[in-house]
Length: 438
View 1 (cartoon, rainbow, N blue to C red):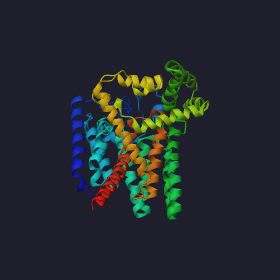
View 2: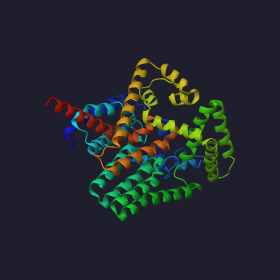
View 3: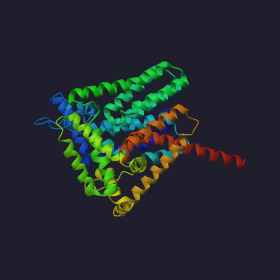
View 4: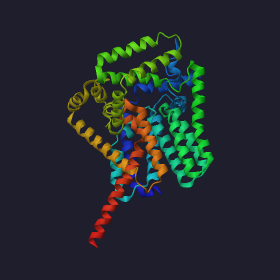
C-alpha cells in the first residue's frame, strides 16, 4: 500500500539522514529538559526511583513527578548499555519516519498532492530537529499517530477489541507527556457519542480505562509526595510560564519577575509539598480570574501560535546560531507586544527571516487545509470529530506556550488532512478542465 509513495518516503528519509549527519558532527543533543529525562533514567538504574535531579542530599518532592516515566523508560535500555546518545537519536529517527508512514497509511494522499505532501513535511523543521534531540516529542508523536491509526481502524471495522489497544495507547501517551491526562475526560465524552452511534456498550466501558489509570497513577504520586497529581510540571508551568508571560504582556518584565518570585516565596513557606503545590496553582488561577476576558484572549493567542509558530528557537539551537537565552520571539511578543516581536524579527539575518516567513506561511496553509478537511465527507464524521478534539485539546492545553515544539505531536494529523483536502480541490479543478475541453 505504501509502495506508491516510494519517492516521497525516499525524500523524507534523506532529509532525516541529513539532519542526523549534522547532529553527529555538532553533538548538540540536549535542551534543559533533556538533562532531567536523563537524570530520571539514570536514577531508575542506580537508585530504583523516579527522580529527575541529583538524589544525593536534600530531595525536592516536585522532582519525583516532574518527569513522568514514559520517556525515561525509553532511554533506560540505551543508558544501561552505553553512555552515548547516538542510539537514542537513531531510534527516534526511525520513530519519526514511522509516524510519517502511519500518516500516509491513514490519509492516502492522491497523486495530485504528492509534491505538496513533501513540502508540508519538509518545511516543518521541528520534525527533523526533535528526532535528533534527547526530548520526548518524537516518541509522543509516534504514540499519538498510532492511537489515531487504531481509532481509524475501529471506525472502519467497529471491532471492540481494537478500542482496547487505543485506550492503552492513550495511557502510554499520558506516561510520556502528562499534558494528555485531561484528555481522558474528552475521550469519555467522545465515546459516549460513539455509543449512541453504534449502540456498543463496551465502547463506553473501554473509555473509562484511561480515567481509572489516571486515578491510580495520581494515587501513586500522592503516596510518594503527599499530594494527588499527575506531574508537578502542571503547577510549575502555571506560575513560571502562564502567569509570568501573562503579567509580562500586561505589566512588563520587572513586575512579572517580582510577582513570580513573590508567589514562590510565599508558597515555599508551607511545610509540606501538598500545600506548596495547591498554593502555586491557586495563586496563578486567582490572578487569571481577576480579568478572565483578558486572560482568555491571551490564552487564545497562544493557541494560534501553536499552529503557526515557525520554530525559530528550534532552528537556532540545532544549527548553533547564537541568540540571547530566554529572549526569543515569545519573550519579545509578551514583553513588547506585536511591535517588539516585529522589531526582533527584523533584527534577524535576512536568510533566517525568509525561512521563518516561508515556514509560517506553510503552517498557515496547513491549518487552512486541515480546517476544510474537517468538513470533508469522504472521511467518517466520527474520525473527523476525533481529530478536531485531539488537536484542539492539545492547542488549548498548551495555551500561552504555543510553539512548533508543542504542535509536533499532531502536525502530521494536520498535514495529512490538508494534503487530502488540497488534493481533492486539485482533482475537481482538473475534472472541470477536462469537461470543458471535451
